[in-house]
Amino acid sequence: MILRYVLPDGEQKEFELGRKSITIGRGAETDVLIADKLASRIHCGVSYENGNYFLRDFDSRNGTFVNDRAIKVCRINPGDRIRVGDMVLSVEASPRKGTIMVLRELKDDMAKGKGYHTILHEIIRDEKETSDQ
Image (cartoon, rainbow, N blue to C red; front, side, top):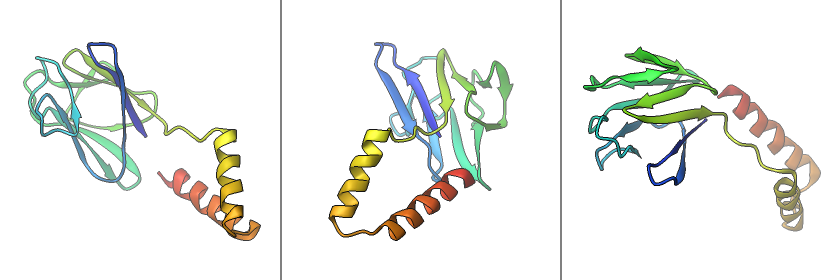
């Protein structure tokens, strides 16, 4: 999944979630830096557990909200909106590659000697890993 947000200067940012836990806040040591005076230095965090992502508030002064509800711990899903201070982060499903990119990669793999059988197995494996997330 991806966290997508817009900085005060209008720059769009995104952060791809993986299996490693991340922190969100206004402190320079956080993974997702929120330039908002209402955000705590280390405001909240996202962790991956048993195939799901969970958002945890780290006893922040102004709270963490998911879909306008204050949370302490909450499972997050694509379509959710996380609010930290005045900053809103959208939770989105990971983007899939476009057709042109997939065909280019397929052509490159075949030029390097990969056969149809190997490529098909890789596609099935990748699709299974995506659906398990």
